[in-house]
Image (cartoon, rainbow, N blue to C red; front, side, top):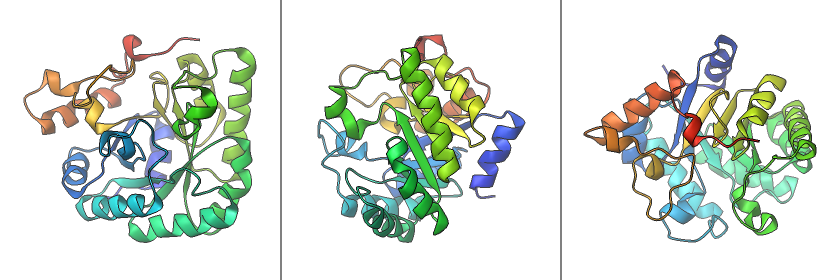
Length: 264
């Protein structure tokens, strides 16, 4: 049975953790979905892991539409979430037009990075039938404003503001909140503060779901490994077994463990 927004809401209500992974092509989409991963994210992370860029900023709408179309053809029942790339939702009008392109390509939901300035955009999308995931915390499209890839929400003022933004964006119509690189105690507070399912990456084990870049969890990314990443292929004999281990460890909340978590 296909995973929907309602499926994820039921998971949250029942206290069941769910899994998400990136995919960018039909082959990975098929094996990821067949492994039982609930959500496939076509991330603008493809700009780094596929294109070799040093950030996500060069990724275009045409590229996101192309990869979303590929994933949709390989998917076997996962919910498909597609990133809106840099400046593709700078205005409400642009967001509506570009989200429509991603939905036509096969996305079931779009993901936007930002804070309370996105409220009007999220409302407009939601009113027109486009489910939205609001991405808070470390938002890679803002890397130049942050001055690098840094944990967000470590002081109490910033933490309170992030909680407030999460609630405001949910009220505006966001169906999912995604938290990246925030201290685990803050992620737990936000998860409790909103009714929407919360997906974490580098946000501890108390969120409703977990997401990783598939290249990271298979140990394929060169260079320094982020703290929140675990190489599941190192413990198994095949990609399929690694994916199954990831799904199971997310479900029983043994991943992420303390070593993959940021503290306040």
